[in-house]
Length: 98
Image (cartoon, rainbow, N blue to C red; front, top):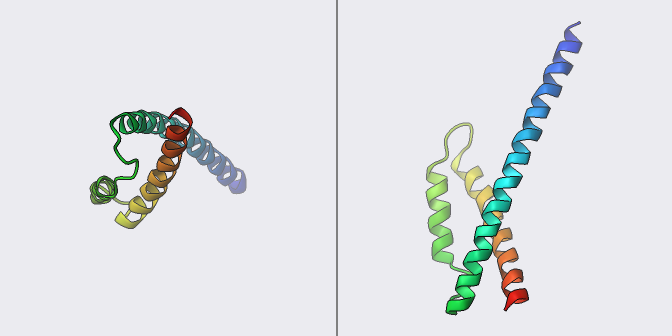
C-alpha cells in the first residue's frame, strides 16, 4: 500500500514540475522576444550586440538575489546559459533582418 502512495506522490510532483517547466518556457520566449527587439534597436543605432559590461551587471544582480535552495553559482550558471543563447538568437535575428 505504501508503494502506491509513494508512486502517486512522485507522479503528482512530476506533474507540478512539468507545469513549472511550461511556465518557464513561456517566460524564456517572452525574454527572447524582448532581446530581439533590443537587437533591432542596436542594429538601427549601430551598437554592438555583445555588451559584456551589461551582462556582468545582470549576472551579478541575479546572483546576489539567490536564495535557498538556490545558490549564487547555480543562478549565475543558469543565467549565463540563458544570456548566451539569447545573444545567439539576437545575432541571428539581426543578420536576417539587417
